[in-house]
Length: 377
Image (cartoon, rainbow, N blue to C red; front, side):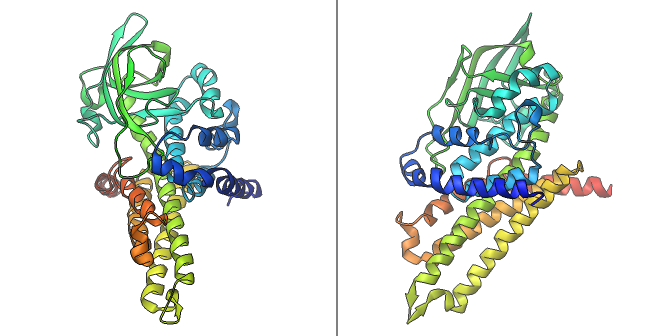
């Protein structure tokens, strides 16, 4: 932990999550819905803006501190932690590529928690292949008209703005630009929420653009710079998901360990049986390794060094570990783990998607392999 202030920040997050968020989790995750109050609570405490400069309302914290906060939130409510990571992702293009005027005008609302964002990159036919997107932005005299459909968008229908990538020229990866689209724009509509396996507190739906007009001062970065912006943002987003996956795995490990210490068979606690004790030890090793991977990547970022490869490593390691640890937690509980009387079945369902979003783990392996080639080429 870099400073005493940072340590206190993480402890405050832990306390707030236990007292304010934990009582809501089960009901939300069973019924589904958008936990607006949870985001308001975190926004009021400044927890939606931690890695951004204080000049425009950010927390001015190192990325490693922000990620530890995400981990703490995920250990209590994974859906909200994913939402926090998505919101940070939506802020990145403006914070890093916006003009001084754009940052001064929009960032205070984004970073204060008054506005919550959606990140519109994926499309029905272009997920991993971002460069094949077809959502188009057509130039007009003083702005752009956006037409197309984005899919798998967290906060769809609930966000206040959408950081959106659209094609502005028919030149492949160099023909994509980035826009900040207000939620109340005429022509903007939303599909029905996807009926997902887990993360029911994170509604995901299509965002549909039908002649949505966006003024030119809401284009972020240079025309045609969108692909580079999206990929740089995803490096950060992958670290957010790695931290969230680590928090989820920690929650599963904690639940499994507590149960193994309480559950008795053959006259003793089941944790005393070597087969189960070793399983828990492997779970602990996986969680610890995940945490080390995302913290290492974050420290490279904080030091101003390249971290693309390390971000993909962290995302790959942490999300594969989350799937394994949550599955093993269900095994520790035995038949009870397969019921909704205990949270481990939900943890297992929530873990699966972490291997898919922000770039599938197959894509992470591709990124890592290409970075290795570049380093040694």
